[in-house]
Amino acid sequence: MRTKLSVCLRKKRFPTEADARAFTLQANLSLCPYRCDRCRQFHLTSRTKGKRQPRPLS
Image 1 (cartoon, rainbow, N blue to C red):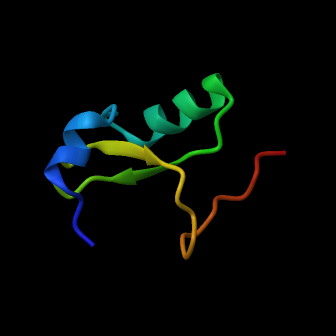
Image 2: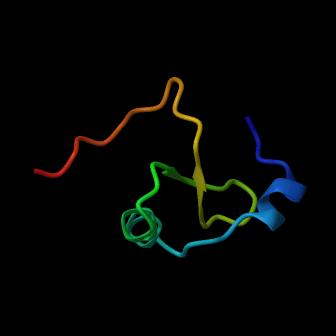
């Protein structure tokens, strides 16, 4: 499913997936990064249905 341009423009952009993950850890949020097909950068989403979840760091 393609990201709507209006959604892409409203979301914060991260140049790498690692930057997006670091932001979620620092802000203590449970969001997942994904690569946007519009801007080719990473955004965060709360939708996880059908998505592969990374294993927690121990």
